[in-house]
Amino acid sequence: MTEHRASCRCGQLVAIASGDPVRVSVCHCRNCQKRTGSAFAAQARWPGDRVAISGSSGTFEKAGDSGSTATFHFCPECGSDVYFVNGGSSVHVAVADSIAIPIGAFDDPSFATPQFSVWESRKHEWVEIRGPGIDHD
Image 1: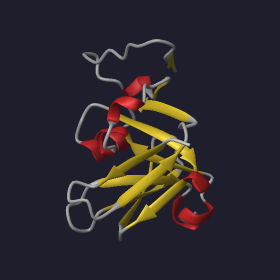
Image 2: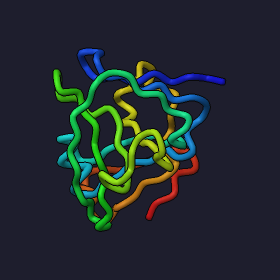
Image 3: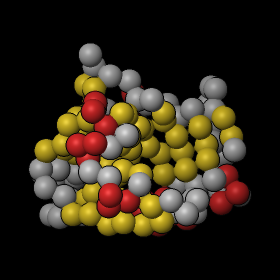
Image 4: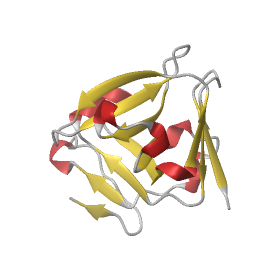
């Protein structure tokens, strides 16, 4: 099974995902815009039991445009977001239904091609998401 390694900028916090992601998406919600400091975020999701985490993380909980809460895990040394779990603090990584990892955190970010573009009502007018098979909301 293929493994995909993601890490923070300093390398202290690492996530290793096994196999193919179940979903790769681009999100234009305000939470993702603020989290990335960009016009959108791109992330890949795996079932929680297919992601191994090593290193320590700080957490930050935030409700998104949908109203659901996510817990973001970041490196306390360099501040990079490495993964997030939807569902808030009641969801622990060991039992999470899914874990999302920003595409830019991967050692090889080219393996993932987004299939979905979500929260397009928040998309900046100058952004155009293109690619084979992308569903737009």
